[in-house]
Length: 170
Image 1 (cartoon, one colour):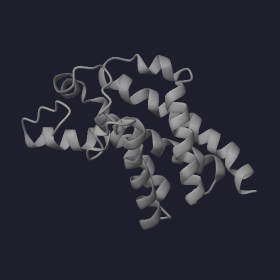
Image 2: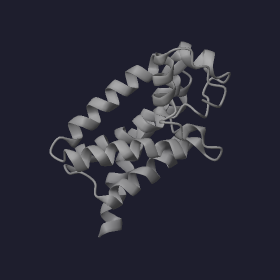
Image 3: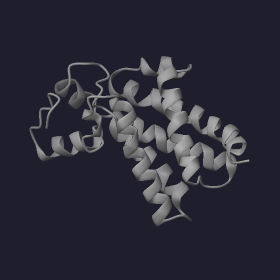
Image 4: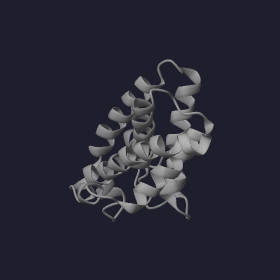
């Protein structure tokens, strides 16, 4: 599986696939940025297949993946030696979904193609900046800290998209 992954069971294989976003987190260049594309694929696909239910689907996926990812501390500790390994990009996937959720709730509409591009941009900006309380949330123990800071970045990114997208599209 690469990147030191220790897969000992079928459940570990599923964990690895979800945590690395199908291997996107193994990118040698900017794994968090590359891993975010897993969220883009989920968000765009849900919106394309079920436009009337996209917000509910994004919300359900975000909650499910956040809780599941946050409970993976033991697996992460035995698989990667770092507290927040670069290959762990499920937090970016969920953070992108949170960006879409916040934007859709504020704007009362779903984003178009430019909106998804803006969501990606703003999420990456706020994920890197770690504006408080994101920095504090990052310090939570185990996978909770890995997951939580990106959700705060998603909230900031959704607000940023809501404020800037009307300026860009005129």
